[in-house]
Length: 249
Image (cartoon, rainbow, N blue to C red; front, side, top):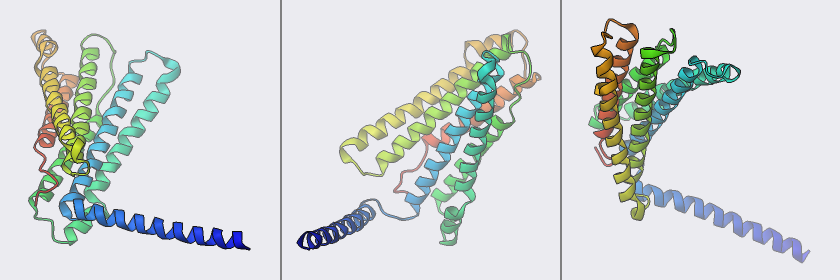
């Protein structure tokens, strides 16, 4: 009987401790980081950049399959790549139009500068994802076609770098680990800068210049798609580099 009583008392104490710890942690987190609109929009930014990263990686898998180097794996790569693009697009759409966003608008934040930025970023990301979703993969995978597909993969990599870098910068700005926040912001900023430099080199470097000099102009469908993707990617990366901090009003 005594043992049963001790067990009951112990469980009750643990329940109180767990409840106190959970509530205390939530209260402390709210005190430190806030639960206002800027923080909620920053979390939506993280969801949008995550969706962008999914779409970029999915696009790479589709292109890899279309290179037809491993017939036994290509179908799986193609199907999963298309699934990732679709899923990434759905994440971005949910962040832009879901109940969380509607709640922010209903609360009167529709005209906030950070809200305007959020929609501008979301529209730019959706544009990139739509281009990746519709990009033609038809044609012989050799010569200039192969070169351009490798460029697309590098553009996708630049987008993924910028997305991850912005996430690290945002994490640091949230001020949850003061001894690591500065490094997180600095490294995230560096990743976005490197992504911008990579994109600039891909779109204006030696390989692109040589193709144009050989007569590969904008009337070529794949070249036109390549430049369209590059321009859309540049807009997203530029917006990510200019993202306001979580403390923006």
